[in-house]
Each structure stands twice: as structure tokens, then as C-alpha cells.
Image 1 (spheres, helix red, strand yellow):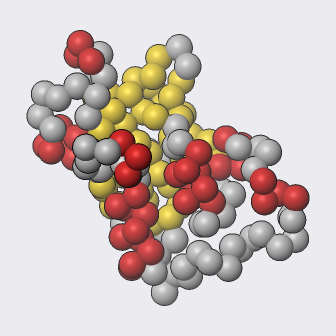
Image 2 (cartoon, rainbow, N blue to C red):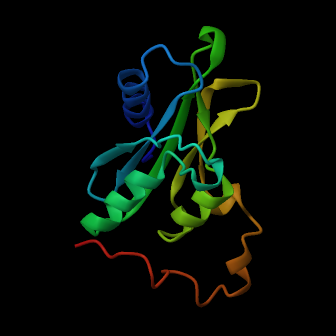
Length: 148
């Protein structure tokens, strides 16, 4: 699996280093097709309408490098010392990650305990994704960068 404790720990480490002791701070970690791990977090601008997701910076970096994303995980430091929670990618990030195909692995929380996580493929997280109506034309998505 492309998502493992190392990937989760990379996101936790960035959150802890960048936002020490801050509740609800978060970060993301992505694994590329060559094994590289990229991390990113997002600023909080005064206007919430222009916020970015934690994954955005790492997705842009992967694109800049011309590498394919194979896995993504996002974490947040819960309040009252309840540890780090894994968050499933929001709908916008699912769309961003779908550029790399339906088999990108994403971390999702275990419903009974968000400090625990499991791995799902995008196709299983969003079985009714709009582009599935064109099954012969979607994969590989022509806009996705090729490895190289």
C-alpha cells in the first residue's frame, strides 16, 4: 500500500513543527510514483472564500516535478489533546486527485475512532463520480502529468 504510517507521520510532523500546540491545525502528505513524500499545509487568509486545502501545495509540487500522485493523507490536530485525526479528502481534493486516476489511495478515518485510519481508492470513496459516465475516455486522464 502507498499509504502507511510513514506517510501519516510525515503529515503529523509538519503539523507539529509548523503549528506547535495549536488545535485544529493540519497538514497533508502525498506519496509520488517514485516513492517521494511531499508535505504541505495551507495558510488561513482573512477571506474564507480563498482558502486552500492542505493537499494543494503538494499536488502542485507533484505537478511541477512531473510525477504521479499515488497516495494522499490529510491530518488535523484535534482539540483537547485528542490526538491527530485523519481526514478524508474533501470533494475538491478528490477532483484534484482524480487527475491521477481512480486508484489513487487516500486515507480515511475509522468512523468510531478518527485517530485510526484505513486506506481506500478514490473509485471507492466516490463511486458515483461524474466522469464515470464516460468509462472509455477517462483513464488515463489526459491532463495528468506523466512520470518522467
